[in-house]
Figure (cartoon, rainbow, N blue to C red):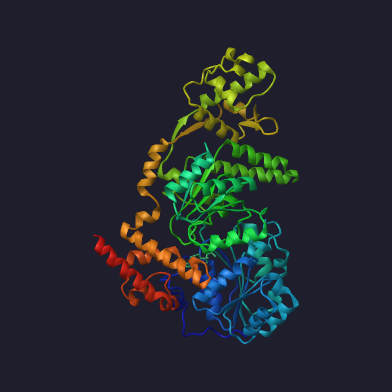
Amino acid sequence: MNASPKPAISAEHLLQHIWGYPTFRGMQREVIEHVVRGGDALVLMPTGGGKSLCYQIPALLRPGIGIVVSPLIALMQDQVVALRELGIRAAFLNSTLDAHDAREVQARARRGELDLLYMAPERLLSESGQRLLEACRIGLFAIDEAHCVSQWGHDFRPEYGQLAMLRDRWPDVPRIALTATADVPTRKEIADKLLQDGRAFVSSFDRPNIRYRVVEKRDGRAQLLQFIRGEHAGDCGVVYCLSRNTVEEVAMMLAAHGVNALPYHAGLPTETRSRHLRRFLDEDGIVMVATIAFGMGIDKPDVRFVAHLDMPKSIEGYFQETGRGGRDGLPAQAWMAYGLADVVQQRRLIELSDADDPYKRLSTGKLDAMLALAEAADCRRVRLLAYFDEPSTPCGNCDNCLAPPALEDATEAAQKLLSTIYRCRQTSGSSFGVTHIIDVLRGKRTEKVERYGHHALSTFGIGGDLSEADWRSLLRQLAAQHLLEVDATHFNVLHLTNASRDVLRGQRRIHLKRREQPSERKRRTSATTTARQSVLSAGEFALFESLRTWRSGVAKEHGVPAYVVFPDATLQAIALARPRNLDQLRGISGVGDKKRDAYGDALLDLIRTHVESDAVSH
Ligand code: ADP
Ligand code: ZN
């Protein structure tokens, strides 16, 4: 049944003429060759790695239709729209289509008039879905978000397990399973359930264009506003918060300060949610403030920053959420404000959950790894990748690489802190919170200090050499490492733990990180400014902005998301190269034949007027 691929056209030719990209990325070529030859494949690439081409190009090269199984109904439509813009015959079948349109799509599939057909799994497994597939010539099955097959994962979908039948029913049709979720047991489960002697293609999980940054949380919301205004004015971004309340408050706060921000969480009416999602996808420069309900399948390529106002509960979560930035390969930032409250809050959530003990231990382990990443003084990327078993060397593109913090031995200070907690409890029979303990250490005679007679303690005033901020930072570090405990069920009072003793006996060294002053830091980052302005001159930047405005108009007119017309990366390349004719335009990454025909003249006109007005103004 497997006829050999149409030999006249190569994968490379399609890449260059349809997508307008000069070269394959990472393992794309190998995967494509393997699938075109009829092999099964498991593809593991991080978000933004370029998974889609791995099945789209084989679907064009193999005879018959490529069936794509995707669990995300809302996003099928965007994929299909983007493919049609490229001149590819694509369609989807899901519950959003009315009966008439669905029949139309099915008829086209039967007549062999489609290259790619996206289907929700329940649709594919239904009787009518099966009948349709029987009547079509099928070139390949692509199973997107393949980790949904894993019973132990957080995205488990029972229908995915039933996709095993594809192998029995169409043994000669190659299957390609794709995911960005990587752990080894999940890989095995996918291969066992969905593939036949599938070859695994595992890419590096590094996202070199993402700059990781963690700042000490003082006034998180003010810091966020400063970050967005200072480094990402007008950019598209996502801000993650833990609770629905925070989401709404932060969205309102940002909007009040002129940021184009919208809230998104599971408690909003469905209609509001989808309107906000639509605006985020279609318009430029929207900042979505969201809970993690805003998640899987956010395919927007030009998200320039992902900010966390609350720390995620695991490195997997952090990696996935931050991975939604910079899918287009241009610089993006992962920014997180982190403080003692995050440690307390996340521990408390585990405590309060009604999960069993083994699960709580597992969750505590994952949280501790996340805390270690947040506290790290060395390269964050090295730690991130190590968590996914990938060795690496310091990256030069995280806060700790760019401005290494100075480490000061603070073991003695930690001992003072712990013994103050101990003594306060011993003399008064009750425990105290952060502020009081720091007051005692720094020798502040507050009313409370006098009431409890803590000014008479031997540790009163022995910590005047450190600032309150230093003490808080030290406290947070000790709490993160279980060297002291914050009792969230009881006014956040502080307790010693068994491990505290190691510090008191000097068996464990503690370090305090010193960052340069915020003002110096600010000067340094604004010297590099936003990545885009550093790449483009003022004139080029102005052209880029005009191109974006033009793109918004076209997108509105065609009813498609702006990035479907052209992604930012392509507009930036055009602004840099200023092509003068269609031939020069062809050389630009992201300009395929169809788009050059459709938009080429308009683009050249726009560039010409820009160059002229530039000449006049100089
Ligand atoms: P994933 O599904 O792995 O998250 P996508 O398939 O959506 O990633 O690709 C991410 C972005 O990279 C898209 O904008 C895509 O067009 C682009 N892209 C993919 N392959 C290439 C390539 N070889 N050259 C340039 N851009 C590419
Ligand atoms: Zn680094």
